[in-house]
Length: 172
Image 1 (cartoon, helix red, strand yellow):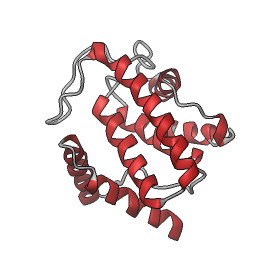
Image 2: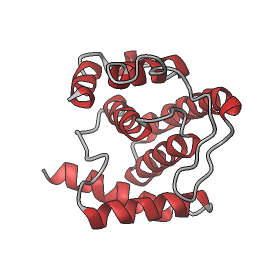
Image 3: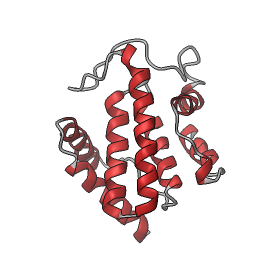
Image 4: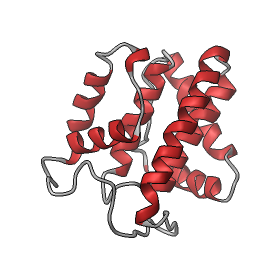
């Protein structure tokens, strides 16, 4: 419910008024996880974590990685908004999805915050609501494999997933 409520709040703004910054990302996390984890919700993790076979950056590197992520995202968004090419948009969404999960900035709720972040990006691009995570087990496994592929430098499987998600949103 917290995720849906946060997405509804985000889409009450004008797309141009959504400014994705480290502070904004922490605000999302605090609003989604704060009732369960008030002592650390809204703060970058202060411990190292292991996510499956992935070792995210050391906790002390997270603030720098998130700042670079936000700066890179802003630059990518500014060029995408001008082009409106489906392949480029899928590439941006795949990158934004993968990179956020790769950084894994919080102790928990990274997936939820990432889905909200992706919904905000779609809204900024004035695209229809699009599935940001499948609950179907085989699709979830496919997504996790695509993230691992992206970790190895091959974004193609994740871009394909985003192309399919965008196509489904347009059909619906």
